[in-house]
Amino acid sequence: MTYSVAVSGASGYAGGEILRLLADHPDIEIRTVTAHSNAGQPLIDHQPHLRSLAHLTLQDTTPETLSGHDIVFLALPHGQSGQYTDALGDAPLVIDAGADHRLTSSAAWDAFYGGEFHEPWTYGVPELLVAGTKQREHLRAATRIAAPGCNASTVSLSLAPGVAAGVIDPSDIVSVLAVGPSGAGKSLKPNLLASEILGSANPYAVGGTHRHIPEIRQALAAASGADADGIRISFTPVLVPMSRGILATSSAPIVEGASDEQIRAAWQDAYGEETFVQLLPEGRFPRTADVLGANTALIGLAIDRAANRVTVVTAVDNLVKGTAGAAIQSMNIALGLPETRALSVNGVAP
Image (tube, rainbow, N blue to C red; front, side, top):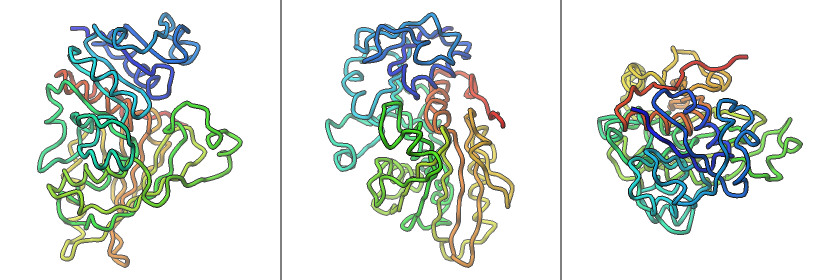
């Protein structure tokens, strides 16, 4: 069976990456691409790397244009998806790459986003531990999927095994992330100009203000079965001059009595059979270059007995495993297709 697809926000980074991956999916026909200010223009003018899709023209993003497809991807700025999802009740499968349907708490939405709160959808991180199982079990036959925030899923995958196994204390988590500017979208912003970021590293959303914090707390609470109030995290992203990538360094205290063997076993048991989330051998740590273009999250684990903390270093491509790859992987599961279809574990080097 071939599924017809519409992709909104197709002229942006996330929309373009969804299209790049779907273009090689044997079960997908990309029928419609939409945009706002760029509507009426050839897709190839805005995504010149997508040569196989040169025949497509960007249409207006309206419920009428998006309806009538088997699958609709929404790659819109946060707070803009809800106006369309409310009108797409008849669509068999809708996947939102924005934040509108990620959070279960309306209070958290009000505190970090504001505006109208929309119902939470099935979270699109298949490998994430959820109360003794994996999130992929909740994705099977799902009809509404919320793709993750790239920073949030990276930190959640980093720490969920230790939280679920009870070997780290989630009340004192510290995460510092080196991130590429493509995660901020394609809109022109002075702080994202090449002249501002080349040769520099710039922290942003410092002091507990980043919008992905409640998403991380929600995911780690689900992994442990505890209340999100017990998850406390100091989260600091740093913009660095690489177009793609996240390198997240997260640490948490070791729970009293947890042995080194138990700690490493928590991550090995969680990800040992996974294709896209891989724990590296002891003493090895990932680079963002190793995951460029791939749907992989590579994890390095260190046990620091002097500080009594576990340190986890995770690398992802924010546009693939962090966004579009996670969305398509979740789509494959929901449709009963092979989970790895159109997704690669191989990066691009050098």
